[in-house]
Length: 233
Image (cartoon, rainbow, N blue to C red; front, side):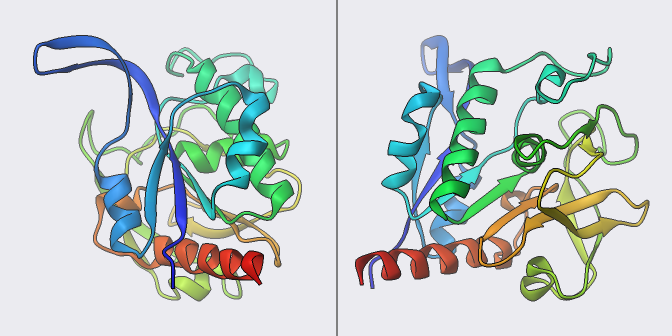
C-alpha cells in the first residue's frame, strides 16, 4: 500500500544556519518526523498565492496546519490586544485558503495549536487573545491534562484523560460554524475541535509533535490512506 502524502504548512521567518542569515521557509523537524513515524510521507507547504490552494490540496492525501504566530485579530473582527503577537499575514492568507480547500475537497485535515485556532477562524469563530496558565515559560513546552468529549472523533483516538505537551496563550472563544468541542482542559479551555462525520477535520490546541503519543497523527494518516484508496478505486 502506498504511504499517503501529507502536506505540512511552514513558518516564513528570518533564520540562521551555517554562514547564512536570511528569510526562510522553515518547520521544526519534529513535524515531518511525526508524520513519518505515523506512516505518512511529509511535504512542506511554504506560503504561496491563496488562489493556488485548491490545486495544491488536490495533490495531497492529508493536510497539517502547523503551529506558529498568533492569528491576526482582524481575521475574526477583533481589535488587537497588546499581548497579541505580530501578524503573519502571508501565513494567515495561505493557510485559510488551504483549510477552505481541504474542507471543500473532503481532504483529511489536522490543525495543530495555531492551526486549530485558524480552523476555528476559517469557520467564522473567534479567539481569546490572551490566556494564562497554558505556557510553562517563554520557549519552554509545558504539560497539562486534556479530557476528551465522549463520542467525539478525538475520543475515538484517545479515549482517556491524557497529559499533552502545550505552549499557547490564545484559545478558541466562539466556535465556528459546524465545529464541536471534542476535548477540554481542566479550566474549561477548548483543547480540540472537529467537524461532524463524514469529514475528517480535527484541531488540537496542544503540540503532539513535541510528545511521544502518535495516536492523533495516526488518525489523520489512516483517514488520508482511506481517502487515497477511495480516490484510486
